[in-house]
Image (cartoon, rainbow, N blue to C red):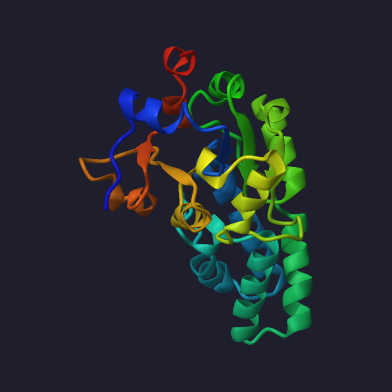
Length: 255
């Protein structure tokens, strides 16, 4: 069932009563494509060039879900951890006839060549987080690694408001394992039903559903009347929003 867009009345019902809010990072707090297309493309191009297989630049990009100007929703590049992506890339290159040693060496060259695109907040992230932090515990659950996550949160000016993180290289469960959210609930000593997860992917939605938490989908650029056509995460969500600033209304949260 397609979720409704978050209205002020629904915001009071879904957001105000919860004790803790967990955010996905890429595509939720930050614009996904501006940063990560550049990152993946730089790695893929250098890897293919070092391996002497120019065509691999195209096939590896397709395999990971990296378009010319966007990350394919739900693709490995959008939802997998760094170690999972490395495994997928290695298997793909070996499948093209590369030796494992060649693939590992060239992927190392690719990683050394990696460059990020600009970090762009998705809406008014800093003031929204500050408003929400006045009444809620705040956390982030992401497939990205911890070092990069901490750097980006601090650059966004919100790191000091985030009291708990679950990252892709922590060595624990990763999305869509519900333990990602259930572990945060235990850490904060709140019930799962008192936790809200906000994300942009089907994986985020499935994580919330498995954990028994509320879920709001981020649909940055809704086209037409059916956001589910471009954001499958909105199907089965409690509501959808265009950016996290839709969550915060001082009048709603002050009552």
